[in-house]
Image 1 (cartoon, rainbow, N blue to C red):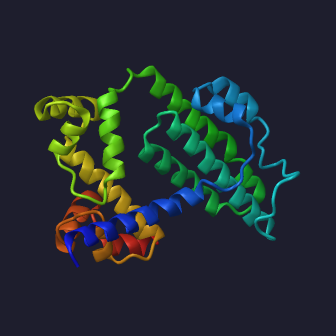
Image 2 (image 1 turned 60 degrees about the vertical axis):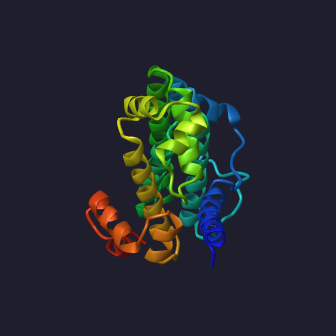
Length: 247
């Protein structure tokens, strides 16, 4: 298999995984765009008012996703949380922050024993996102160059990304991009790329059946052993140990 074929295979695996995540947030949802706009605009007061009564307590007209009432409410909570996360991502909330937050609340919901307990999570979840959006908007506007870099990094996690590639893409010198990137993200370009690759690897270990070697290859690590070494340094455990504890 030549290099082009290997690159294509890695791209397909990575795209397939992203497609699975996209399917997660494309489920039907309550089309209250104004409500989601309040969250993305950081209007905490309005969101607080609108969530005084959880929409999960009002299930008229909802689809039946499970014959089990508790499971049905949990499924609708997952959908609602995913949609809120997607709206916030589109409005500028960092992808990893939005996903980590949705994972947090979905895991809590999964442990709930009654539909009422699940419904009670709706308000704190929405307020949490709204407060983060308000905080985000108070910060200085992120450099468009760094935004372009981050977009390219996420799009090419299945390849080896160099500082030169990013600098050329943004039209900046490598030295200036290094300083600007560290200033805006708190990380070097290399550390940021590694962190995002490991974050993606964690999701692939949890939500897919790809082998450790497949994941290492897909995310352009030079070898499985190097991937394991970097993963353990970031997470404190090997990829297999992580999968066994979180799958």
